[in-house]
Length: 221
Image (cartoon, rainbow, N blue to C red; front, side, top):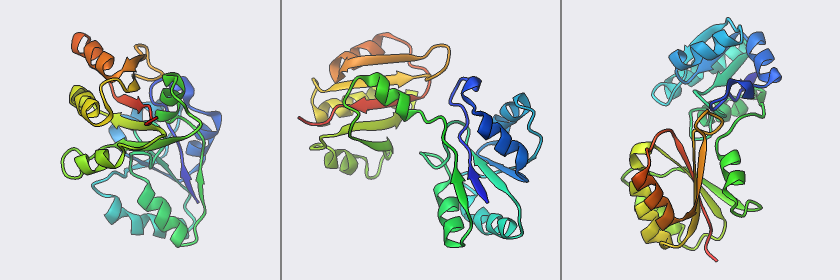
């Protein structure tokens, strides 16, 4: 069995009882960064074998993980924050486990884009999740393909690129396109700023830019 276990994106109280019980019951925990996961596991009294499983080693590690599960080992995969495989490692392991006829269960839990979308005030009956845009190659192609997108669009962005991304969006979607930026979700300094892309640019030119961002942009009318 492979368990996909979401972890808090900020507030430790967002960890579910089921997630804790699963992590206590499995034989091995795969963590995106063992240093990041160690305080979380210690906080909840989880003492298990923990191995690193990240984008740099996942292709090499998959066959060994599959072998362990076939021998009867129960394995849980966690990321640094949120649900594994959503802009984090996990898809490859899930796909290969299914190919090998192994059971996979993904627990419900924290994911940054859901509260950001609901908080945005933008239509959420239909939306598209774009995650992180390519930093260089393919970035403009992706943006061009979204120019006529009518659903609310959701992006992840790092703080050092947020102003540049706002400026790109102003060119692609228009300066008056409605949007929302959420940062530090579930943490002490959680903030959501709403308005036109021009207004968001003005806000973040005058205020500190800290934390990971979820960018929600209204679709074309």
